Length: 148
Image (tube, rainbow, N blue to C red; front, top):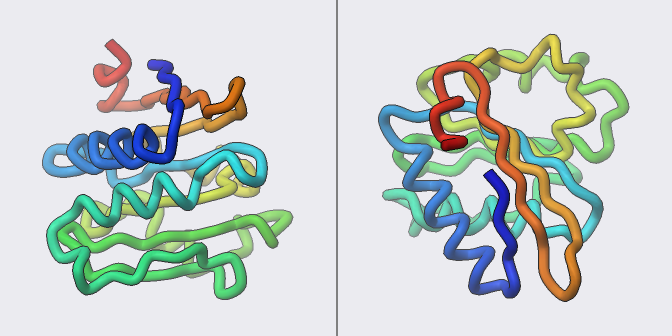
């Protein structure tokens, strides 16, 4: 599935739709990729703000501490792997992979070798396109039906 996001408002709407898809039954791992400035954190903020309990969550990029937790429903674990060369060494990340209890949102997922990714996941690739952003979603495992 591919979409064009012309504005910040489009990105926020898309994040709301992604949050809707990430509720029962849904993937518990969503991986984000894209160059600096393509809107990964903005999109994650929109996802989290759309979940119940988000009024208790201050969503920011966890670039320096690597992980943030948000008390939403479902609870969100937000990783930013930008500073890691090989995220497979990050034990706190590995414990959440494949968890059904949390919604795992991972920025810079290209730093985590694919062998660690759960079979059931969604990959969101963002890129620059004209004045806006392109978004390509690839679903794997039981969520591949989303691509229709």
